[in-house]
Image: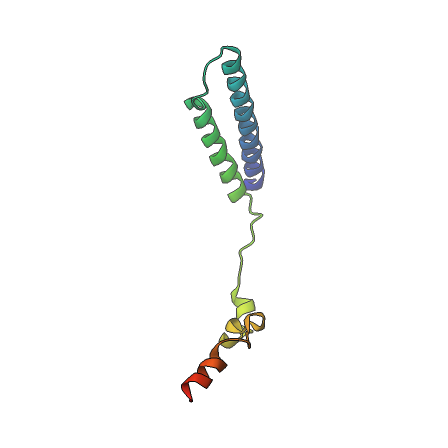
Length: 105
């Protein structure tokens, strides 16, 4: 039952967001026709967008399709030294040998 309600909230959130996009486009079109400058999106469109975001987020979170990420099973098999081992960053042509020659003169 909870999954069905969550899906309904996702669909409602997406449809409200699409209506928000359509309203914003219509507002821009209206401003162009009346030769008014664009100073931003009206407050009601912003509120509608925020409501659609929360409805969609609530639907996704409560849909129970999210799987927890457990890194402990992968990390338990490795030693701590293996995390710091990066052979691609090993450089043998550096100034250490020249400093050694200067310091031992």
